[in-house]
Image (cartoon, rainbow, N blue to C red; front, side):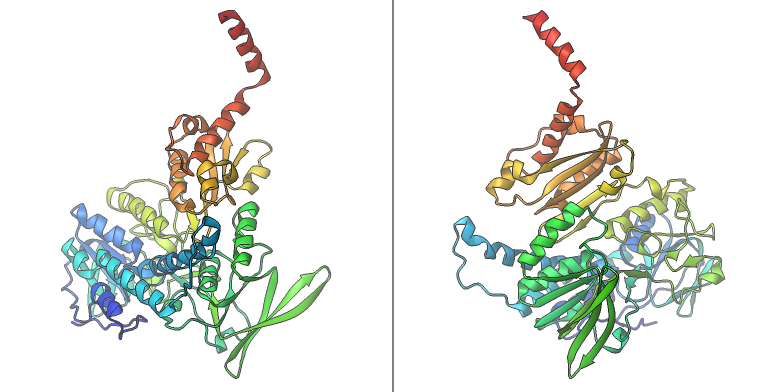
Length: 508
């Protein structure tokens, strides 16, 4: 039985052909289904692959069903291609400030087709880790096709029935288009299609000022597009610290990105090949209209769960607009069926999909009771500078009636940041009587730093622990030690100072 290949990946590119050979081989033949499986996984993205290969590694009989491309959104249309573009854009940013570092950059220019070609080559190189052949060698029966439930213990793919003891729904999500009049009548890009570009848009309008909109908006501005980002909220990255958002806003504006924040988009239209976005800005009791034009639109305004066509009702699985309903053990309304990743989680991140799938394996296969609410999940926006966060927020601290306290170390007080000319940023930690509860970092490589805070929060670490941890000098990570030192100084109350004064007088 041949599985039909249905992909948005360009087939005339050598790297893309290599990618498809890995993640949806055109000549793939689905295996003959076993009489029954310990675990059947719907979806071959990060959540599905971790679930399937983890279970097979433990000796379970496992089947994996994927309708499109193994690797899912992360490999094909998300993390991997976007970070490849961002790497090239970061070089542009470095070149623009090279004079201040004593380096004459010369006549550097962006070769956009070469940038996209590099992205496709790197994506194809990484695809080997998610290859169908590799998954099969791990002991998983891989089925390409549309999988759907036919009853509480059976999934149908093609003409084959996969009987299961346990199942995992890991079908992920897709870009959501906001209900703007006229949007569905004009061509627009999402993160699933923007990476098929071979020519740089002269003018790009981005709908959405969240992580994807800011990351790609900054990147395309550095490549040479005239970019404007639209956002409903008055700040970029609405879920982040206002201080972090303010720094990023200044950097975006310095990169030439136009920002229309706190606006409502009222209509989208096309006239003679030009795309026009109309908006209104609230000004007190009145509103003022405006519009902008472009030759390309990128919609980056949220995600929707992939639940259509799964026939969840036949399995007794409940779903909502937010996705598959699960309890804290990630178990659905069918006790034999679990879910993980974007299809059920509020955290739409690859690492969250990985973490929830590891939890599902314990609960589904070994009757565990691990709770998703105990997971400490960070996130990073890969702009320049990066913005990373984990745990409680500034808003939580402000409403805590003094339960939580914040300590901030500015990068201008960190030697490595000073010598690197990267002083606009900070490490902000929130603590509860010394125990770390949250952290926000704005720094060039904040994503590489946040792990220290994640580890501390996960394992009950304290600011005293950070103070006593020896950090290599000079590094930006020294900011953690500085935060710990500040806490220790603050903990030195007047009464303790008096006691120490008496002690030193006695020991003289």
